[in-house]
Length: 221
Image 1 (cartoon, one colour):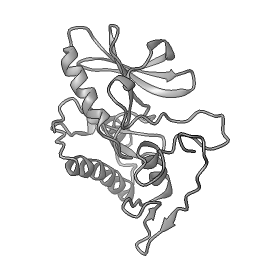
Image 2 (cartoon, rainbow, N blue to C red):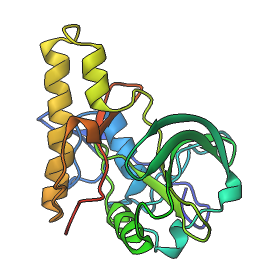
Image 3 (cartoon, rainbow, N blue to C red):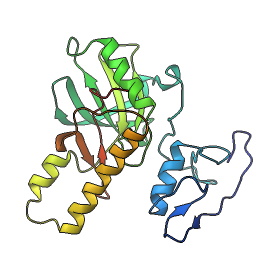
Image 4 (tube, helix red, strand yellow):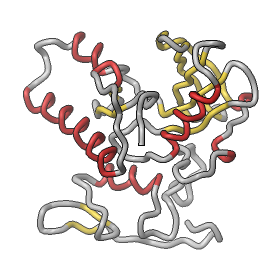
């Protein structure tokens, strides 16, 4: 559905290499990857895929490409559910945005990070959108403490995921995880970004066991 409300239909095609596409320049190994990418990037379509037509259900927010001001979220729209972990800069909690969308909310402790550093990290994440990178949904900077709101990754950090399943994961699964990280890092390289702190502790695993690169605080253009 376009900004004017018109409904457009696009045919998902498959090339001779088995890759899926709507716009020929953007190729994907699976239909879910294609859909996830186009939720954040128009890339040849009339608009990003914002929600299923005819569905009143919730969908992941499409935020890539917005200006910095448009990333600002109202903290009253956030519901905190439970703590997921603690780090050097604060606490990460499971929550909901607008009572429907599960998100991870990173609370920045006062004094742990300057507001300028916080904004720089957020601005890095705002420029990035890829199926193998954890997606930023928004920030809260008009009050203290500061919040970063990202997509929720159900299986937590890759380091703990691997330790808990030591010896139980097949070679194919491990290879697929390596490929996920490589795809995310290749995207960063293609866009002239250096992560500078890639480690299993800085990668997250979702419910489908897809690994995504996270923690861009050290990333530089």
